[in-house]
Length: 139
Picture: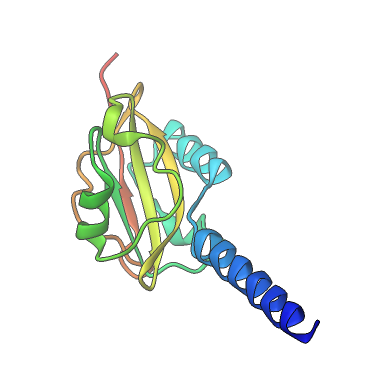
């Protein structure tokens, strides 16, 4: 009987560890931040200060263009990305803004390519240097 309790406890602990490692440090998509960025860009702002729009901790961020792989994101920011990257490695209709804190991605933001161009952001943004460059496509 005692052996069954020990084995059962061990299995429960093992399941909890697997669950925690799967969902811990998982980046989530922030559609509210995407709307805030789009509102600022629609208002004519050409350099959007991200620190004033974010309500979470981050120490670096970067914009990635279409067809960027998970490995390229991880290598560029020296982080681990868990969670969805919106299939950017197969899509050409969006840019992906990835926020990291420490060694993990914490938030992702879809930035549509239909109206705005974010290609002039091929550098790492920080809370101190947080200006997201926005160019409007000619219509």
